[in-house]
Image (cartoon, rainbow, N blue to C red; front, side, top):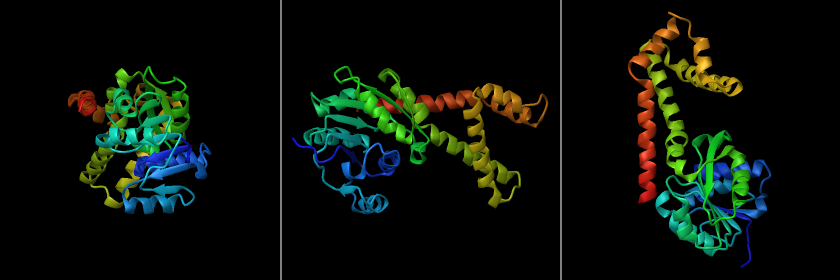
Length: 265
């Protein structure tokens, strides 16, 4: 079978479009050798306007490789279609979809990669875990890593850890955003003007993240900003008394469990 495109991104939603944008920015693929498949006519218009040199269609062309950026319930159908279209490598970004599911859908002769990206990939600052199965050529992880590096950090993790990665890293941005909402609400209750709250909290989290990335060791940084008997110590004492760590652990466990349920369905 001939290959019309080197790579097809199936699903033109936020994550699919983010990956495509990163690939084109990094020159990992050229616009002429990549296509996007999207069933929604409205979304096709959006993607075509953002990437005018990329072929955007509702039907799947022949391809050498495919990224499956669709929801978990349709992954099996889409993976099988990609294999039928000639894809020799298939990369899924759907939560809970195991390599065994991908293998069953694609059949023999196709290298499969399971991945778990997170939302900051939309701005090129994501973190994505990847793994493959024993039937695939291990070199497929190099290929997947090169693709996903266009939108952030890539780590290789044994599949047995993927539900935990999903609960921590995949869902993690929502925890951060929820904390931001809580800080904004707390600032409002403290009497701060509404118009300054979101910019201040956004910079608080952004600046703290940059500092953590630069220096590492969050415990040491926490200690550095906490004077004995000071204001920060008073605030942290409330976190400790109300069990912040246990609460976060429960949230990660709940998301991990849901990921496992998705993989079993």
